[in-house]
Image (cartoon, helix red, strand yellow):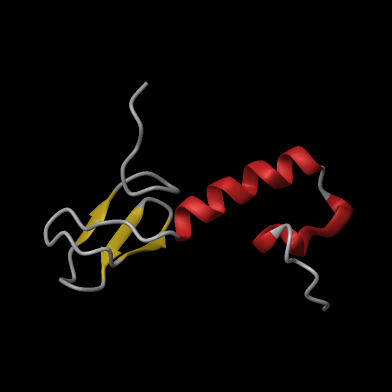
Length: 76
């Protein structure tokens, strides 16, 4: 598998099989999911996604629920 994903990032794995708008929307979601988020209890940016809606702090070990892609869901 070649790694020509400098411009498109992690969604380069789909190549031309998926449309551009869909890939860019997926990229936004994946980038937000992977960025460092602060823990609610200790305040350190060490939260990682365990599975859909389950988040765990690597510093203090607290496990909590949140959104599927972000630890805190946005209110509408």
